[in-house]
Image (cartoon, one colour):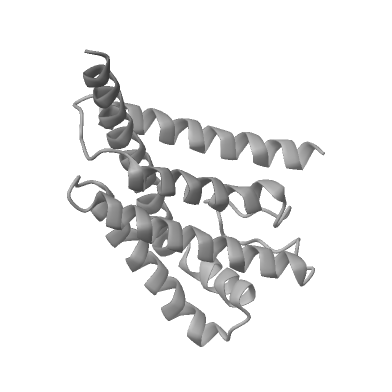
Length: 174
């Protein structure tokens, strides 16, 4: 029936979105360990705290990202994971917006793997908003994990990375 088809599509979408968001979070956590010094400095500047406090704050964020990513992978914990993702990305948005309002628009926020002198612009501000909105939608999607979901999630993640690179290139050219 049409209801069964719609439910199946929503479950496929739920799994794909969950895997996509989990990959974003897991890569962000890994990034904090890979570029630790750069991100401690970025955390210090973004939150306006001393470097000694920035390191545990950054590591706490990495632990939260890792735990949230793991929660998103299981249908039984997906809604809670999505809620934590909304909170996390909303916090990142608030920190970025506060830095931009302070005039620190040239700050390398550590939001991607490469160093970016272009700092905090619309793309950087809109990225956590978009991810937070997607996580909010995930909270209301049906729990499910289709065999195709991992591939779709990886495809979304690849497109997300490509969009970030294109945005960086576009900002550099401007």
